[in-house]
Amino acid sequence: MIKAACGVRNAEWMGWARSHVRWAEHVSFLTRAAISIDVLLADVSSPGHGGTCLFLGTVRNGPDEHGVTAIEYSAYEEMVEAEFGRLLADARGRWPEARIAVRHRLGTIPVGEASIAIAAAAPHRAQAFEACRYVIEEVKRRVPVWKKELRVDGTEVWVDPSGRPTAKPSHV
Amino acid sequence: MIKAACGVRNAEWMGWARSHVRWAEHVSFLTRAAISIDVLLADVSSPGHGGTCLFLGTVRNGPDEHGVTAIEYSAYEEMVEAEFGRLLADARGRWPEARIAVRHRLGTIPVGEASIAIAAAAPHRAQAFEACRYVIEEVKRRVPVWKKELRVDGTEVWVDPSGRPTAKPSHV
Amino acid sequence: MDTTPSARVRVRVRFFARYAELVGRSEAAVSLPLPATVGDVVRCVREDFPGARALPERPLAAVNLKQVKLDARVRDGDEVALLPPIAGG
Amino acid sequence: MDTTPSARVRVRVRFFARYAELVGRSEAAVSLPLPATVGDVVRCVREDFPGARALPERPLAAVNLKQVKLDARVRDGDEVALLPPIAGG
Image 1: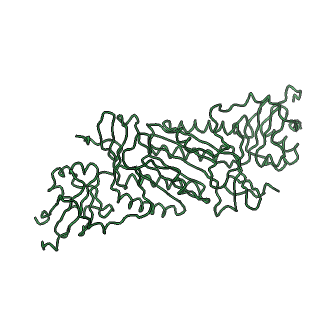
Image 2: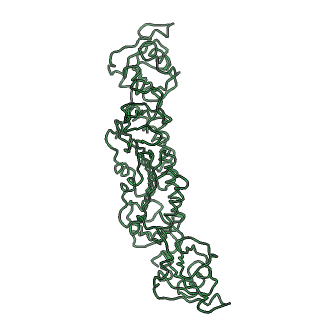
């Protein structure tokens, strides 16, 4: 069967595919440091924008979790940048007057600290709320980020999109 | 007509009605200083609450305004405290897991600064958004605060609830 | 109807924002015969204070820090507030 | 079908998160005969890498930083990424 005649190579990629890859050159949507809410709010503030909605997603250790101390966030970073660019363009198409800024943090984030922050300012509050909500819902759907729970007992568990750990602990 | 037999007095009230008046004794929902977002977010943060929605209402000078430099906020302060207490109790009834904090600023607030901030944290983001939105909508409806636009030309205009200035400038 | 002093109520009336500007004061003591409603208080105020004629006949009102309708009864010692359209937030 | 070297595509395949752990690597170079789809790339990977059998037959995939369906064509030089279920935010 001809289709099976494929070759896979263990060698590291040599970089010649880079020229096909496009991503935003401007300010990164990603950070490995704590997210500065002040910076995000300053990014979207404007005298004509009277309503600002900020969403913070923080690392949780609630009754549904099992002794989570932190979550390790990893990503397909170039695609995250590109996808955020597309996503914000979509949001601006829906709410042309809105100003939107977003940061996603990667690396090990302790419980209580923010993994994502989205600020949306608009002339009136309805657009601010709607744009902010839209962005977080789309992030959950299409921005390639993954999380692994780090637990007090030393185990590490990949989290599936429903928010529950996957069946197979990753440390096995 | 007996009902017309009423007496009005110019004298200042003597205070004996105070005992009939109840308001919250805890932290005030009002401030005359800039609102600290950090304090509000700290108030609602909890390891089990992974979604936080913050709403900021800021003084606007957009294309619909007429050279607004600041807005002077005044209030029936004791009732604001009582009404916020009732309003937050209503919100907690609807979203029992939510943690909500709110501050309304009074006095002269320059364009771009926040007059109100509402933080709502919940285990999941839907409740956080909904609770935050509920609070700002109810504030607009039932918390006795009034605003007077201060304009570059020196005029001062009371703002009506639709967001538009009232017909009669207050400085007349 | 009994109009002896013991059958009257005395209430504190408070004015805010544009209403305070129109009436030229932020509060007043009003006494009126029993039984009395918030609407009666509004009528007294509009009749007796210069400037108060410009108040609406049916303003938003609160008694003891709670919004009420104009047919709500007032009791002796109540605090009655006349509220311009709310514009907070 | 023409299977000369000029009628083959060479793509970079990238693995993330749990998939990278399963395959034991974060990337690979894959060459395969034209015409080829993302689904063909997935089949190659699942056949030739130890551990890659544990990948789903129909994973989420992206070509050049954009999600695509498995029947999307790949061209020479494309970057094909296999994405575990997205769990960001």
